[in-house]
Length: 202
Image 1 (cartoon, rainbow, N blue to C red):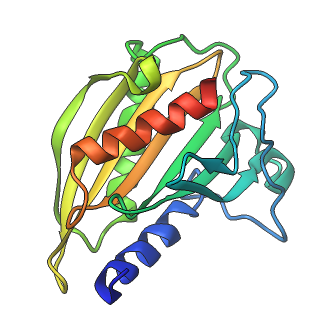
Image 2: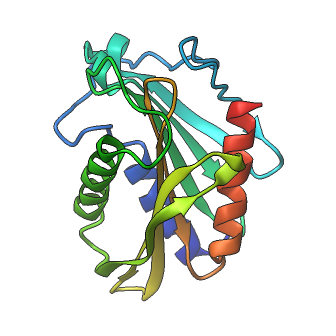
Image 3: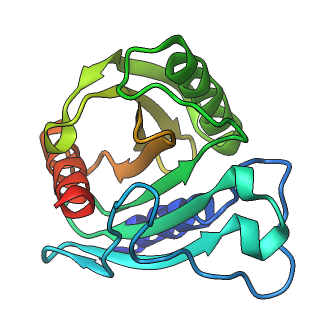
């Protein structure tokens, strides 16, 4: 990995291990999220294929008394993506969340997360949506998806953020994939999303 790519990946890792909410701050040593989520049956293995490895996970209920934030699993995705995928599973304090990607509730939460992504990448110029929002099907499951593109001014490295979100068994399931535009393309990013969702649902 070149020096420029390494700096991009380090920046992405720092973003990816940030909190589910910009207002939340973990205290002490965080409790890891479970490898299998009991309520949904979703699985979060430490290794997915040859290219995706778990970096860390957080149980926000046990770590900071905020169960509405749910859980977060952060994966490093190797070349050519050279990025980080952050999976969040939460209910936002709600007792009922429609399944699938076409509900108003999922659309509203999706827009909120897009705004958070924009705030978390202030150094990227001209950050704008280049694809979506539209329905996509990682792992054969309906998600609401969009991809943003920005450029780091000092290096002129293009940085992409793909957000996928759906309602799954009374939870919001979101995947935020940050990827390096100098190496990867949408096809590679889509393949990584497919691999992750396949591993979680098999």
